[in-house]
Length: 233
Image: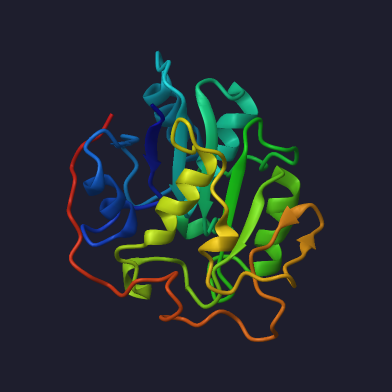
């Protein structure tokens, strides 16, 4: 059985956040515990992730949002894959000074492929990182690139909320025992023969010029009641 470990961004997510929704769907899903809420101190976040994985033997998928994506990349560069079999990296940001404590600089992000399969889900309207910049990191990290269209930074303010696509992406990284890899083409509303490669990072965007619709088409749910989980590990 594959373990899911949730890696938060700069702040702990609100109860309505899609990561909380994921946690509430399975009590075995755990959070990385950290002590730097409201600011991003890379060394402390990487140490917290390492502590959460210490002694773990089960195959693990990391599900990271925002600055949590940077935590995963920095940890992987120094520690190797360990028990991690894959990582879902959702809307990584370009870190700016107000996100840190003002004294600790962010280490240079790794420029090599991650040592495990990964999916980078990027938004066309993310104020924290442009889509082209996200595509750059997908190429560098060897990640599959999923185009979320007009999704903002995928926060509760943007309407996320329950986000069923996350479950499909997790299953793609860790398919259930006895099943092959999940084919997003049969589920992704705008997938079609026009899908193309983006310099080694797969894009699931349609060949149509317009971006995927913001709140329709089946890949994004509206903000709804989420089940809050306080479980950490």
